[in-house]
Length: 261
Image (tube, rainbow, N blue to C red):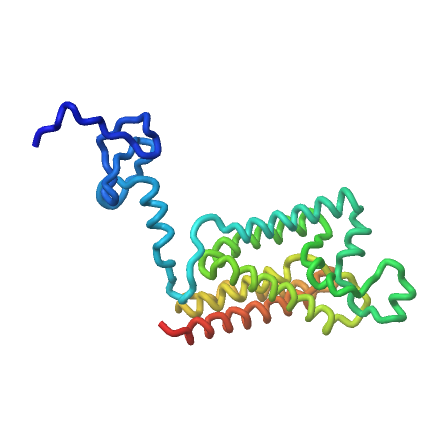
């Protein structure tokens, strides 16, 4: 085969000033080095790669969920919101005023609310209390565990399901604190939601027929520590979050199992 010496040199459609004799294996157009992407066979241009990603079928994992590829943005966003809330409450509002205003008060009725000016029963405290931490060690430990389990569960469940699991566990912890804690007390922290992630992950391991006993043992030890006198740990929130997290994951798995193939 001979090339016509009078024919114009092939140029990249995205960069007309660049000559390229390398062509995309999919569309056949020239692609300059900047627009070339390695493929299973040969080279593809960036436009074909983008089109292939847009039309590709979602990846379904062994549990039946559509996997969330890439960075676990929901997990890191939750960590960022907790850190921002801690900085705002500590350095702008003042730690005590922030905890009183955002935390979840239990054992408070109309009489107690009238007696104490710093307590409240607003509905939003069920959510905001999950972003209240009482000291640096408290938030550091919670965020460490959140990253540990969030980066495992979010890719498995998908972003929206993971966020739903987290919020359901958070509300479950608040519900248990309100129902079980009889005395006037201030509850806060992300640990209720995190215990939900731990038990949900144990359900995932059990579904995959992997060993989950060590994980439940560790969670049980942390839960038992909350019963020790002087620890000031909301074991009610931990228990509620753990129960709701496990039930939510079981419900998600049952829903996926019933979906038509």
